[in-house]
Image 1 (cartoon, helix red, strand yellow):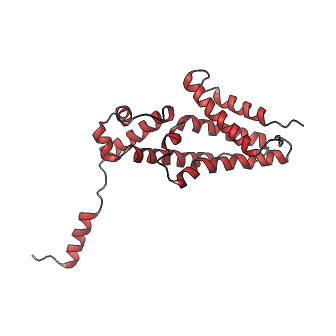
Image 2 (cartoon, helix red, strand yellow):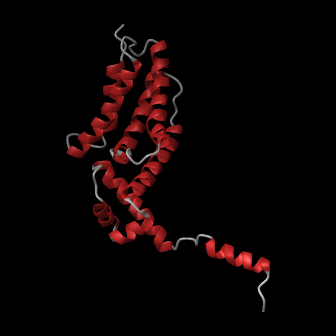
Length: 205
């Protein structure tokens, strides 16, 4: 039977359309992304071999889904950034600026501890847009609360606000590193971060 032009076009489309990934392939991808997130959060230099071993797959399988370490890092970082944005968007930042900043700091610490050095590890592979999302948007939330707190006389305004943001970021990352070193517990860290930051920001008037 001769093939019609329409039939040929359908066949051509079927041949070029990407096939849905099998369930086992999807499980492998999730396992790889999860393993990369866990390892890179602690060690930004974690190798492909280490990630594959943690995921329970072979190196060839990993490269079958991610053609390079840089590609894997971009995907992991993009997921982490998207997850962080969604989580922080649900934090109530209304009311007293000290209380609001305290809630934001606690939520941010959990994200910082979970993803840790991951974004740092991926920084060379991220696009400018991804880097902006990773740093600028979280800092903008903090800046808004700092401005409100300064206006209300709650936070000191005799130092640059950018310096205050840098100090907050250093405390968040420092607490995560201290947990990994066993100096403090993950349960104590949120309160320590909140109290340390608020003490550093307290108005001297």
